[in-house]
Image (cartoon, rainbow, N blue to C red; front, side, top):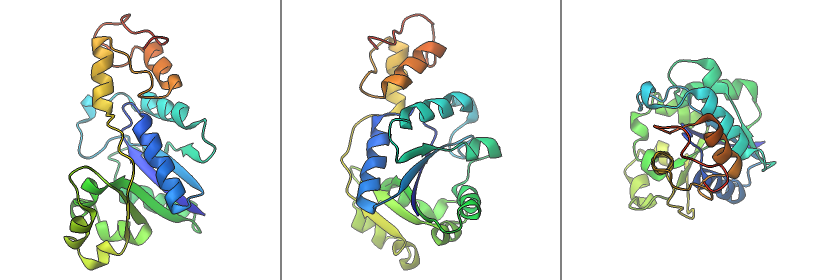
Length: 207
């Protein structure tokens, strides 16, 4: 089984996340892409995050229409900071015959030396490095140790200029977010009043 792994805060998940996952699935011939919402990403303050149960549910809703996508609560259930190496070790134990492809941006690949136990990460999986504006994949790879570079698969992906930060800000301003994120996520945000300073200014129908 060839399994893609796409982690993130997903606060909220949006169509660029989904499109990147689908392009990686097709290009790499993946059987499935597993979306894993972080509980406590090491690089973000916990107090700035929407509670994990909401982020997990939005991710679950967003991925449910694609039979090749699945959502895992492995990091939320584990607790503590969400380090990729810990998640990969647990998945390798659960799925010992799977081949893992960790999907992330080439900008993040450029900083792989700062990850926790990067050599172990690269032993457990290959990295699918998604092209990012301003990051030349060839330059990134030449700047890494050869043992790292050989485990990285650069992917040219269509760039959709959507960000979770932008979506949160649009909700606060009462602006539409429909077509930036799947309709079930739009409706969930409205139902629970997520990202609002004042409830009642956001419609799940009009966005």
